[in-house]
Amino acid sequence: MPTITEKRRRAQHTVPKLEELFENLETASEDEREELLFERASYELETGSRRRGVYAMALTRTDGDKDRASARYMQHRVGQLQSEFEAWDMERRSEEEEEDRRREASADFFRTVLAIAILILAVVAIVSWS
Image 1 (cartoon, rainbow, N blue to C red):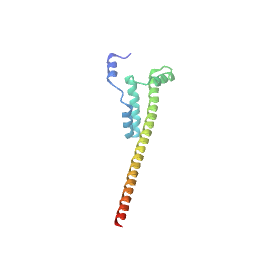
Image 2 (image 1 turned 135 degrees about the vertical axis):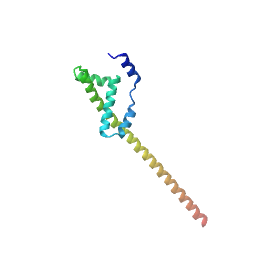
Image 3 (image 1 turned 90 degrees about the vertical axis):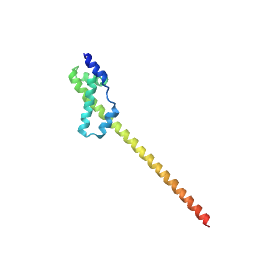
Image 4 (image 1 turned 45 degrees about the horizontal axis):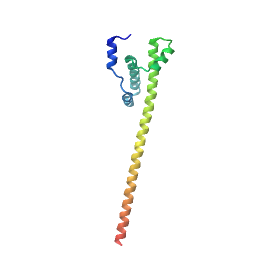
């Protein structure tokens, strides 16, 4: 059973947002990524903000051994976080590619309008010269 001090410490800490974690993972080396993922899973265990279903699954698979369940939880959670990061990264890249396509389409449109305007001015100049 957690002590009052432990409960206060848990209440004071909030789990950092996944978005922040993913942004950090984006620039981290492979070893740093693994460390950040395990740090997040460990933080969830320590603060009591763990995913109940994942912990229940880990507890079941370790026949109720809480120490082994914590280790199993971290393994499962790190795998989940890695998958979530990969999906987030793929989505972010897709959004960047879409933005690049929009920018290029806009530039193409501007060049086309400019070319038409120059053509019209040239035709007007030729007609008025005649």
